[in-house]
Length: 291
Image 1 (cartoon, rainbow, N blue to C red):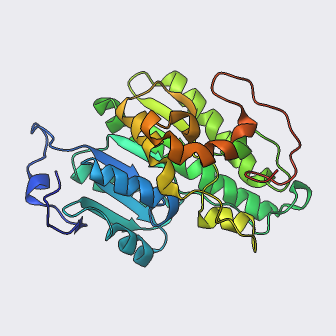
Image 2 (cartoon, helix red, strand yellow):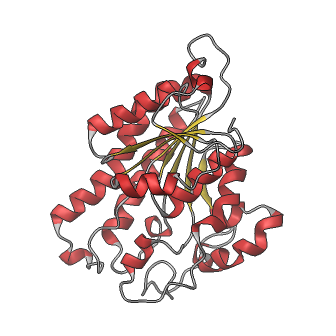
């Protein structure tokens, strides 16, 4: 557990970690979070550290990643690895780092790419950009999942992949990103049917005030969108209660005490319908968060 007053430990074994070898009781859970230098990934990493997880985090920009992780609670144990999630060598490094901390209990596939900005129509979508979207949003997270699955099975762990309402709705301009997220969702859906010991979740966090969302609407004011931290209670509930495998919306997972903070996010996602109800049909002109 974190020791009050101590700064985060980066990329090294602590005394506590050193005794967590084979045959030794594990003292803390381990989470691997991709794309943790900003936005939702950073918010989730911080929440997990607060909950006592040891972290393996990555991002392409090493300086931004280390700056983000410097804001973790004092004493947090974190292995911060700069790299591209599409690189097999980097994925192998993530697995080794997780093993060094005792083995992964949770994988959060958060890293992703929007694609070109402004968003092009599917009829004009550059095919090389489309390949990149599928490589980053589908193939890379699935490859990392495959790599960590043996350890996750052993520990009864969980895989949590970040998705979007663009995966299930037809928004003009969102064809590349939406198609990639839809492919990721179906792969996760099948994985959940195949894996007994592992929870497989896909979560739509809603429209948040992130750089990716800003890139989707260049030049627009998105300050009305909630911060990523606002939906963290929903993810905490999902993970701590170990809910069944499936697709969830953060707005539907918000604990009662945090519902007021999530009301705006829930309103942004009303087009998907409320829990247990069929999605409502409406024009699809502007994309996520835009009527």
